[in-house]
Image 1 (cartoon, helix red, strand yellow):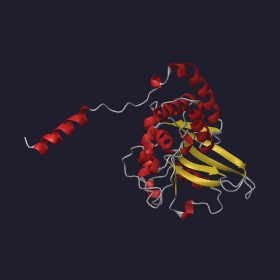
Image 2 (tube, one colour):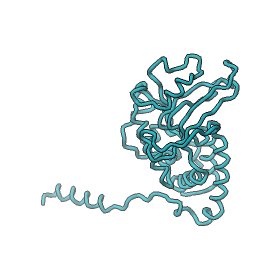
Image 3 (cartoon, helix red, strand yellow):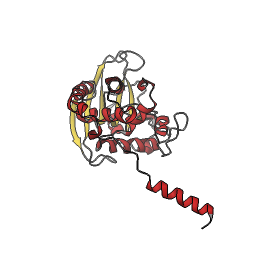
Image 4 (cartoon, one colour):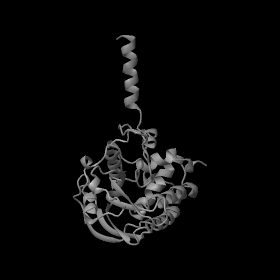
Length: 266
């Protein structure tokens, strides 16, 4: 056997025999935390979910949403506060897949343990508070999210698909006055990628994870970048990772955010 071939063979053997990196489960968390800290975190996550302002009037639960088959996606109708320009409360429709307090608490705890090998409240509360103010743990599968981000009480519509802001290509389906019609609201619930402009938003719910953080955490799918190439593949990756988290103790999008976030440095 030639020397070069032998070296390649040995390296391949070592790689295949190398143990896989452990992935944190709830049972990996310290016993004391599971007994006392976790129930407290669950109560705190109930408070986080109270910030879910779109969860007002539940219209139904659907298990057949395209690309979300088998998941309990809920359709919610909601109203904003009185808009400072239109002087009315704007109506929204959105499909949400929100975690229970227990699921959210588990994701937060396993993220802290995996990233910091700690369940210190400094880290737990960092993630908890960030999620509360960034999204209220509302993962928008499809629909409109009204937010008064730049002007108090001026509620602007942001269209979401697979937990990411998207941009509709048909100008007739974009409200010039920032007040969606019923036709537009229904249209947003059934968007396909063909209805969208080439670029998507940067951030993925529920923790505002971006593409750079995804790559830094080991992500290998080509999702473009955070600048001019914000391609549609980001929607697919976010969807698949959130669906994976739904049936897991881990949320890889949350872990990716925590690994890169300056808020997690102590």
